[in-house]
Amino acid sequence: MANTIGKSWLVAKVGGALLKDGAALQSVLQVLQQLQTRYAVVLVHGGGDTTQALLEALDFSSEKIDGVRVTPKAHIPYVVGALAGTVNSEICAQAKVAGLNPVGLTLLDGGMCKAQITEPRFGSVGKVSPADSNLLTMLSNGDYLPVVASIACDEVGNLLNVNADDAAAVVAQLLSAELLLLSDVAGVLDQDKQLISQLDSAQISSLTEQNVIQGGMVVKVNSALATANQTQKSVFISSWKTPEQMLALLKGQSCGTCIVPNLQADSSKGTSL
Ligand SMILES: Nc1ncnc2c1ncn2[C@@H]1O[C@H](COP(=O)(O)OP(=O)(O)O)[C@@H](O)[C@H]1O
Ligand SMILES: CC(=O)N[C@@H](CCC(=O)OP(=O)(O)O)C(=O)O
Image (cartoon, rainbow, N blue to C red; front, side, top):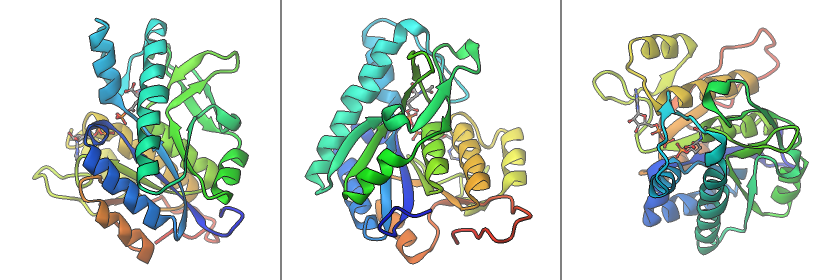
């Protein structure tokens, strides 16, 4: 799928420690501006560290299970404040400095995603599904950069916390986009801490079973694989510490770890590489 002026979509996700490193965030945003020459870019962000710091400052205890925050309803005002408020506005402000034209959004804006609680043990945590791409298309055609915080709402208007890797995956599925998940590691690392350049479904299962892939990286590889399978496009897990490597995408090359889709029987759909 392309936006209406013919660019293909790229969804980039940032989170965690990048948001505490102003210089690194600025470098990533400047690279995204270069990627806009080829792609209609959408930036999805997390901010788990900022959220954790706010909850601790308010004397709430908060835990993550396999990279997903257990979110009692009483925490929601503060989680929303941190993600859709502070972090979203700070990224938009930095994006303006980088010469981009950001518009801050959440997953509920323009009805882009639907959400519901599927695992009550996590509290007010939403599982999202793609719904309506019109708003993102309109913004992209106007040369704006949509900056999307991982907050959604259910059918009756309850605000829900969404893991930002899941959020980025679903926005990529909505747009049939290439997906770039940026983290603080070069990509998925093997047992000797060496970068794995390419991973398929079987290798992901095996490395997860062996606990080589753990914690937040489990959510990332699963979101990446689900998206690759749905879009039949490769997904990249790469580092925000080396943003210049993202420019390889302009040449149709890979960066970090490339998660490859299971090939569908329908061979009319090609991969992005
Ligand atoms: N096999 C692995 N390769 C790379 N990182 C891994 C692996 N297993 C676990 N991790 C951890 O996953 C982290 C990235 O996930 P996460 O902290 O959720 O990132 P972010 O906040 O950027 O979304 C890495 O910093 C690393 O500590
Ligand atoms: C449900 C859930 O896990 N929500 C996450 C949303 C932010 C996030 O994912 O941020 P990172 O990308 O920086 O980890 C949280 O509250 O931390």
